[in-house]
Length: 200
Ligand SMILES: [Zn+2]
Image: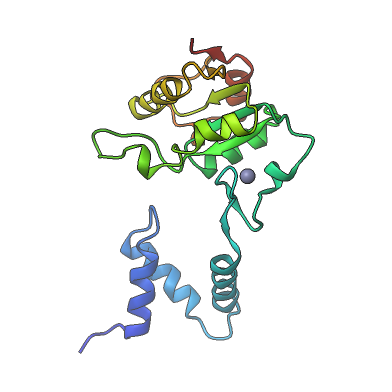
């Protein structure tokens, strides 16, 4: 007979699928949640259900949103002519925290990776050129990380926008090669965005 009840085991297995959570940590969290008269488990269950029900992708930029259009796409004070292409939602939040970028975003949900077999069809890349045309975009800032996948993605974007009249730029100054945008400090990000360079 197994020592651990089935329902607890299922919770442990679900929690251990979270990034950075091993079985030991999952078990510790599960036991904490299983404590009687503890409202945390119920709050968590409701929050998870609400999230599943209410969250979707913004139909314009693919950021995580509760409405058809996210707050940034709905904001008329944002610069409508500049788009910042980011690999994911955490990177969008990192740039928003700096307050230095006043345009709107285009969230890819990944990077091109020939090694891992990730092509344009798996990312939110297909619609980028059409969006630029439809919305009269003048500049696209490709703010992908300075990794080989980030560079591959930036070069691909420059290629698909070639001849479209859209200026394609890349944040530059102070960004070390291999640095993930998500983990860079705000000051470095703000400086890199301010000193962005035309990719030609
Ligand atoms: Zn949006």
